[in-house]
Length: 169
Image 1: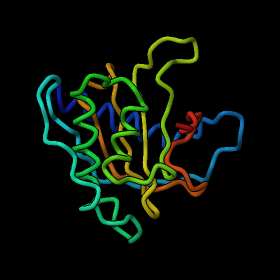
Image 2: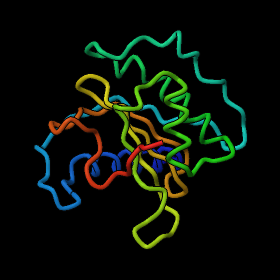
Image 3: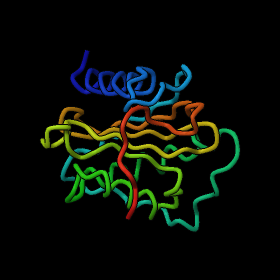
Image 4: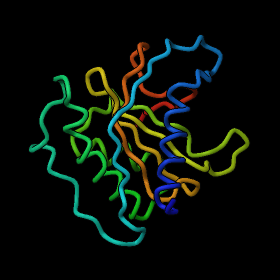
């Protein structure tokens, strides 16, 4: 198995584990939402420029069924552009770039940039709820190249299980 494929599969497994593990911050775990989504690992090597994200005016509103799969290429391109930029380990950088690309900030979640003991996180997850589905991204030094995918939304209305940080900027 190639190193890239192994890392991609490991990252997708981690994203799925977060989505299905039921680990929480003291609240009851949501229902057991399952399913497989389409995935699209972004393969832009670090340091190489990628095309800028599409203009927000060309991005359709996110409301119909299947919209998440249609928006995955823009999501993946936006994530790749942040990953190759100057701040690839900042959850805020991904949220800000996704907002600039036309995604709804109120429908987003992001995990912390730091571990519970204050070290840099080995990976950061972020998601955008689009109808009944979620666009989910994962980046970080333990992941390799960024991974993006479409997963079913949780019955609680969110995308990520566990502790997420407030998007209050």
